[in-house]
Length: 178
Image (cartoon, rainbow, N blue to C red; front, side, top):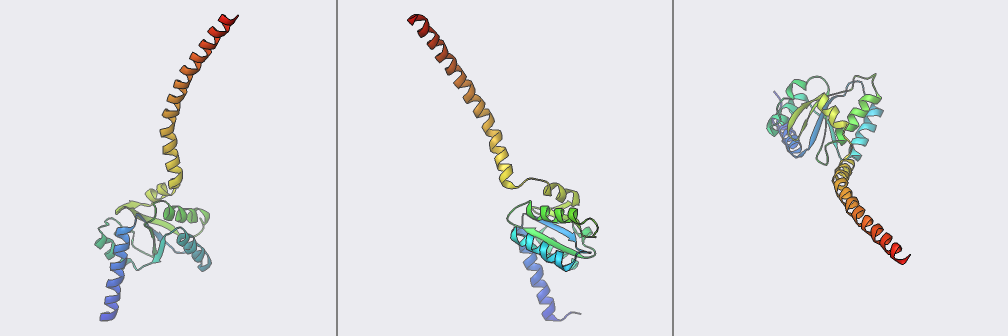
């Protein structure tokens, strides 16, 4: 039986994780087996620079934190060596960084297990699909470009009518002056 002090530390850790998961947009569970210390350090740095948290946490603590945060469906993925990366700053950074690492290192056992998006559990395929999305700035530019297209077409039609009128009036003026 763990001492009261250790039990209190674990409860505090679960509470901190629970609050972080409630605030997070996205979380990604990974099996970190087979990653070297050097590569792990580089991966952590990359995630930190993107505004993501990356932690190795005991599966039982993760399970309780997910339960307290209201995230169901991830307990089946909590076996073996598990780490979690989560972010409250965006949806694509953590999945993209981890998926890119998996693709760059196919010979390791490091893999994406599952994750959550806005409190809902998703499988590894869902995380991979999220990783393939372009960054927020590109998506906003695409939407604005789509909204700009019809307006630009309308402006061209209007200017075409005006252009035709000017050409017709110019032709009449030239005919009368000749």
